[in-house]
Image (cartoon, rainbow, N blue to C red; front, top):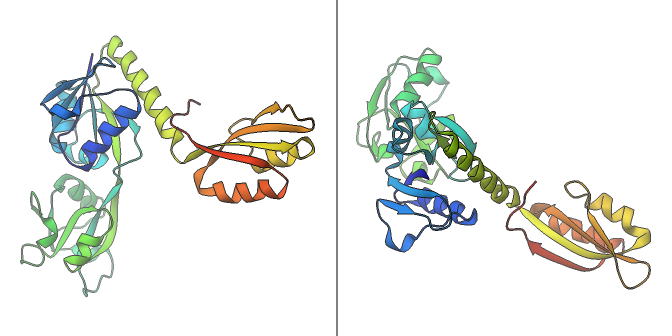
Amino acid sequence: MLRIAIQAKGRLSEQSIALLDEAGIVFDDSKRKFLSQSNSFPAELLFLRDDDIPQAVAMGVADLGIVGYNEVLERGQQVDIVDRLGFGACRISLAIPKGENYPGLFYFRGKRIATSYPNILGGFLKEHGISAEISVIAGSVEIAPTVGMSDAIFDIVSSGGTLVSNGLVEVEKVVFSEAVLIAGKKLTDEKRKILEQIKFRFNAVKDSRGKKYLLMNVPNEKLEDAIRIVPAMRSPTILPLAQSGWSSLHTVVDADVLWDKIEQLKEIGAEGILVLSVEKMVI
């Protein structure tokens, strides 16, 4: 059995549980406990603070973890990044008070910068030859310049709304982060087999995102045109219809081009077009 550490609460926790659920690794979330065992897969969940997850995996307390890449980078623990999961996207940026003139990175020389990510910031400043004072704050970093605790901040940015509401402007994007699946370096062969099953399921879920399944009836003389419009992953499925001269074409398209494709298909005479959601896709 594998033990998977995830964030105890918050949006990343909810998205992690949703991904596991879509992958058929279901846990009883109605009775949230420190440990929760799955009845559908050889795994259990360990609920922790996000900043404790990399250490727990490195120590072998948990076999796997789902956590923000920023936390892995900051903690510097010896873990393997198995996969990027496509949710929890954010960035860690340098921000300064609005109205300040920003000529470039040398602006930060001699400045005091508040952050919850001193290791990432320290490495970045050292790389660029910038000497500055790093002030470590556990939370509410964005208010530090306003109350006189710092000249600038280095913090997580999602939409940027929090910066604006605190009179700050983002000037340097340093790290781009998202949720990642991490693993300990000393997994047994049995646990690595289970990890491969999890990766396979996660990829099937991720590959289906943003995809739609199209079914349509196409005149036989227009099949080549239809295939050019919607070529599919390898080749679309084509089945003859009972009505002579017509075939049914099945394919997968990206959701963001769906309506353009439908309009093009209608122009060549396609009929009875059905659009279905794709839950999983095994490539």
